Image (cartoon, rainbow over the protein chains, first blue to last red):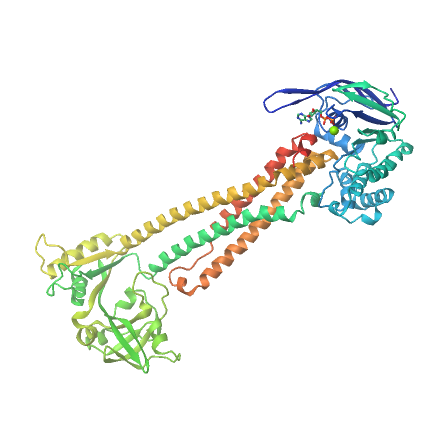
Length: 235
Length: 396
Ligand SMILES: Nc1ncnc2c1ncn2[C@@H]1O[C@H](COP(=O)(O)OP(=O)(O)O)[C@@H](O)[C@H]1O
Ligand SMILES: [Mg+2]
């Protein structure tokens, strides 16, 4: 228990269409992710991977079940202040489509979560600059996202996820929009999270990417069918 | 705060401001037209006191040579009416006048010595004529400022000069201070004023149109005075019982009343136009704001996903809406006044109306547009901020 970062118990999630029709997507998810563990979430398209990761990232609420974050059940928390705090300080979210502010420079994009955290300008820009360096982008500090390649944008997004030094990194197909070479460069950065003892949950449908993880959780039709899925030796 | 994250889209800012600019500008212009019209109405009556009564002869039907209104009628009114403080007859016609090589056609007014004070005219230079001039049928003239400007373009003092009016030589003994615009009525600025006896005998004769300017002793007595004058003139003109009056009486009260009700109608009309303008510009502002909702919603989704609190995000959007609306409003104020200035430069319009910016127009235009801008800029953000980040992010 001490060692558990994230634990879900019987989590259900349904979407509701405008006509009120219920679309059950997660149908009783049980999973546990340990501190410092790098977990990949795999499964067929439409199986509910994104839905699951968004619940873990507090980007939308679960419909039923329990969500323990460091032993505390936050599944019923709806309070904006607490949720914003968790998203801001506890986790860094990396999207497939980067979701950078197109009118801000790389540096300002990275510094934005630190503004919400109330960190003063000098400190946050110094941190942002250091992070840019660590992802090999220091010479692009004042470029806007439109002036960067997809791989470069994703590196900026990773730096943004790291600015408040979160314990947890959540990534939804971080290489999904990239060519395989840029994708590998991104996975290089991910493999460095291990020694910083960050807990990582990453959705992917590519075995090449999943092999970087310590463990693979496999979803099908809204349920975990394998908690320690093994890739075939071909990879 | 992370202001620049949400502000900085120049196109969005420009579009948002456009509706506000148009709204403020239009309302200011509309109100300036209204104020200008109001001013024109006021100017028309500025040299008419509230107890003035004007009597004019009938034109056409019913007007016979024998019953014609004459300046002598003024003296009869003065003598017999109890509630009339003063009555001055004048005779009016158009004659050509010249001095040196300059000439023009002007109104010639034959009046008695009281005329100047009754008409609220102020002396420019020289003197007005007196009883003695009237009695002696003096060949003397007092001229208006436009006449001075036309006949004496070199700017010399006309007093003492001899001008030719209707073929007769008259000495200029005085000038009248400029009265200004006087829409719908003959302006004293364009008049040559001579003793009525002179006009009757030497200048206009029977061709003149007689008018009597009278004043009741108090404003309250204006109706009684009007009745007295009617009775006196009917007796003087020997009208039979049942015969129609061969003169027309207008009192200042009813003239001002008519003008004021016209002005009130105009105000109602302009208010309606302003309301429509505000409605249209309001809808414009609303549309522009709603066009950017999807973009804003996505931004709010990102901001929430990286840990922005609703309060932080809404603070930024409120600031953005207020700043944008205020800047738009200020540009609208400047533009509105620019339009007023330009319209007032148009020579052909300036004689009809002079647009006057009004505080009311500026406050209503600015206040309403900024309110609409802030409301419709902020409200969608308020709604978006209530969404789960996932739902906000889905918006494109
Ligand atoms: N907002 C939504 N409304 C309705 N259905 C949705 C919504 N989002 C996702 N779904 C549905 O939920 C299922 C799981 O989606 P998702 O979690 O994105 O799967 P994955 O990431 O594994 O491809 C899909 O069938 C998808 O169509
Ligand atoms: Mg997905």
